[in-house]
Image 1 (spheres, helix red, strand yellow):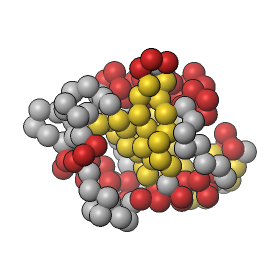
Image 2: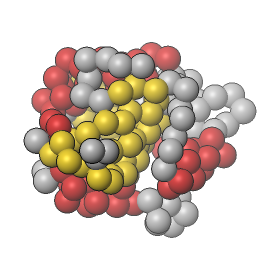
Image 3: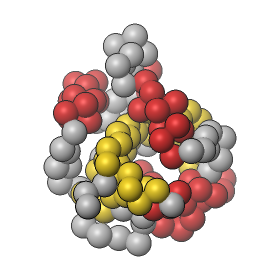
Length: 154
């Protein structure tokens, strides 16, 4: 599905990268019978192989935005900036907010892929998955995502 967000949205989750597939399976295994997994369900030791590619985001309901609380070193080195502490609205504007609101409201993961054109790196492709988390298994109160990079198709 194409949207005005920088990249293509895929609600079918046709993940191509094996590491993303593995991380998505890990998230599914952590899901509770009554719904979504909680942030506390994730063990950093179990996630060691993913850490540089991960990002964590928290909703900020009072401003209807979302804040990056952690962005892995692989991501920051590939895109050339560390947006930890900034909001999705600051980084991606209205299209980014639309994406995160969709995941929050539908309580469903999404795959986003494309080129890193927002940093003028059209030669660099990315694939990512954005996964909702909920301490009560229902109300999204965190997001965890993973992003991988490779050369863009010529």
